[in-house]
Image (cartoon, rainbow, N blue to C red; front, top):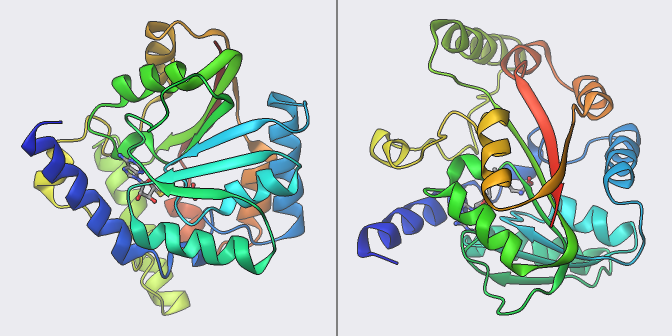
Length: 255
Ligand SMILES: C[S@@+](CC[C@H](N)C(=O)[O-])C[C@H]1O[C@@H](n2cnc3c(N)ncnc32)[C@H](O)[C@@H]1O
């Protein structure tokens, strides 16, 4: 890795260290209801119905979905570059007696030498990677034959006036009605950092399809996660519902 790439990664890790304490309190991060939990499980069973899979959760953060996978009977490893996010994840796993391996590692180049996983999973990660194409290539590398890549992402800011207005109105309403800063706990990347990330406003589905095709993934399909979104919305104040009204998807492909 070049020194400039290392610097970018350090900046990203630092931002998420700062965000680690409040990350799970955001709707869309922490699972808020049984309805949402069940909706997630149904979505994942649709994509990988098998039991006891080896799952690598790249950029696992506080491990919210790593824990869900463990609850579903899978064997989970989570990697992240933020030590504090990992620490939170470890405490959560310990608290509920889940056996999950969490370790520090770069999602763009997971620290595994051989194809060892049935599933490589990422949620809300591609947007914050300087080289998402390389990441997807390396996810393919660590997957066993017939393994699947499963990616959840969205595009919240296409740089248009409409998107900016939606986000600002949503944030204003949250401040006004909830007396809460909706961006508190979000790392708020600098312009310099954003300029180094090809998808700083979110990874467009079409682009992710290109990455999967370039890495040789087959049987690519998407899910719109409608049930999950619906369940999340039920716990979202009006301002956040407005802010979060953007393209959101799950995409998967087979090696
Ligand atoms: C928006 S959070 C998502 C966390 C988790 N996947 C979830 O959905 O709850 C992004 C996470 O990606 C991690 N991250 C960013 N760049 C990374 C990299 N190059 N390698 C590993 N983790 C990374 C951050 O530290 C942070 O925990």
